[in-house]
Length: 239
Image (cartoon, rainbow, N blue to C red; front, side, top):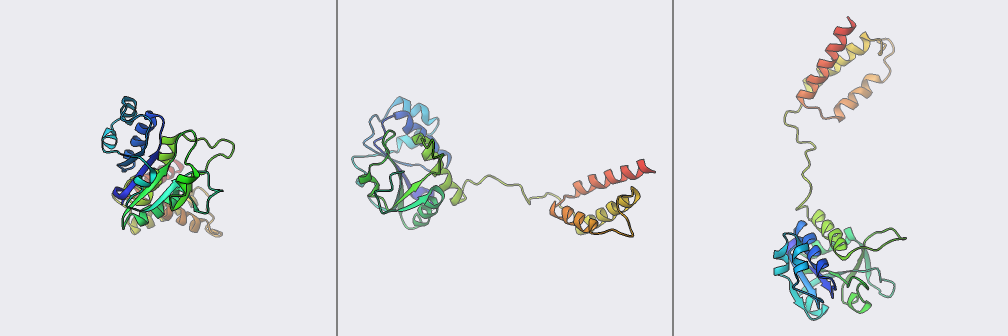
């Protein structure tokens, strides 16, 4: 649903921030940039800082008001810390991403950012359905515009699961069989007895705990062979 999400920058004053915001968007799979009364655009600095995301700049839509930029949307979120004068629902970045993607199923949605120096005015923020904030250090909560865009775009990509990091957890090429693990456990028990670490007459819960450790490791066949080779070397040295 990322294709139905608009990122709206209201009156951005620095063209470099527009380019950096475009770069932040593209890295997370978003491409629809709306600009409300940008001070300088198009601009070479915007293109330079877009760093390969010039296609996002080329397709950017310039509007004369936030109302125009929100035309046709079914839900919009204002990124602002000025929420005390508003009765809007206040969300964190993750919650806003979840709501935006939920509504993006049925139509366009928008994520709105204000000018660098002042942020969104109360009037502009009131045009949006909800308010979202980024959790920051209360003693220093100053985020660059493009940094704020990156945080929200990351949360959107994460919730959409389109750009999740590839996890190799659980993708074992040759998992050890139950029988191989059992042979490892018997081998381990023999060695522990030989080195006088495990008392056959009073074993306690040692082997039970070691079994839990081994099973939790999701060993591959090669790893079992390495451990059994090590155990064999211990036995040989002991003898």
